[in-house]
Length: 102
Image 1 (spheres, rainbow, N blue to C red):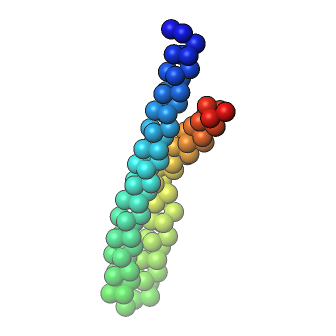
Image 2 (image 1 turned 30 degrees about the vertical axis):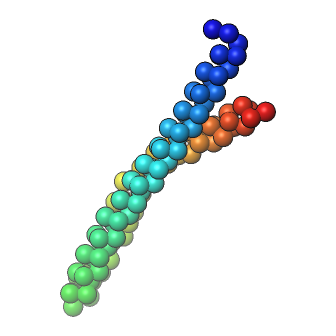
């Protein structure tokens, strides 16, 4: 393989990695959107229960369930790790593409 062919191959690999990083970022954002959509439906259910209850103790329980859900049920399911991985790949790809443009 000649030096020019090697450079072309590396440039194509860089472009492929960039496309994969873009797709990965899109998929990660869609996953977060899905988690937040499900979370909104769950919060709607808590709101309905809260409004149904007349007892102050029961209302307090619903708020406690909501707090628990917010702190344990959303962030962990959003797969922040996938967003971070995609962000790193995109940043790395941006640097590599800048190098090829020179």
